[in-house]
Image (spheres, rainbow, N blue to C red):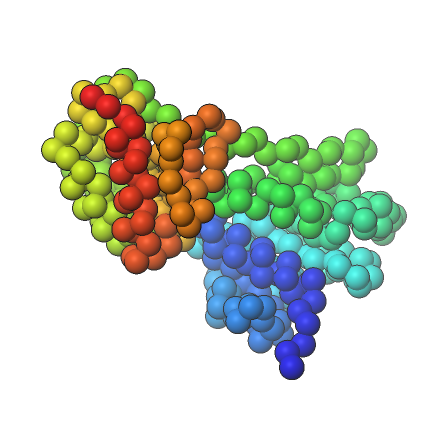
Length: 315
């Protein structure tokens, strides 16, 4: 019988997946990499070795045991210390060692804990020992609940800085986390200007190999709908848009992901929209839905959903 997975490991895995989704490499301490959840081990998401960070061996020794690190090339983007049920003091002590060694630290450091432990986190950060290092200003508190509530928005934005917006800072004046706005559908109206092959090439070059493969197959299906289809790029960053040549509204927008091997598709839907698998979810806008495509054998079904939007947007 498998052992139950601790909330600590679940949160490590959540942060590891999110780190990759926003375009970062991830480091997990060696001692934790054998741990797993739902057949996914933490080792799947971790670098084998920490890259050259331009730091002393003393600092490397301090940071390599922090629960989760996000990195880009030779730069640290964020550090996360998870405190579920252990003494918060010990985790913050590891962070204090890091800050003491690198006082002008440029990346955010998060203490991650359930909402019910916020007061404990604040109390520890305000201890005189830590306050001398200004940990109350340099460390941010990130609740499990805020991360879970905003996970999809952060992943969709592919922006690690979005995490900072949902975290709490203490210091002299407590700064409450902000609610991330609901993502809006990429609505393209008016005549669509075709994208040049060069522009599309430059866009696709920055996307993951897997998402490009999915896109090429889905694109072939879309282009079979008719000979009146125009392909362009939206003003909203990251969307390839499809419209009928004489229509004033696009019938489909596709976003390839930079790190994840998947597509996000946005479409306007008719009143009699049919989605037997229930994969489409509603945007904030009326009559606009979105869904993800993860595998090649899902592209035929995706094309059938898009075909309904193609029929809705008349000439």
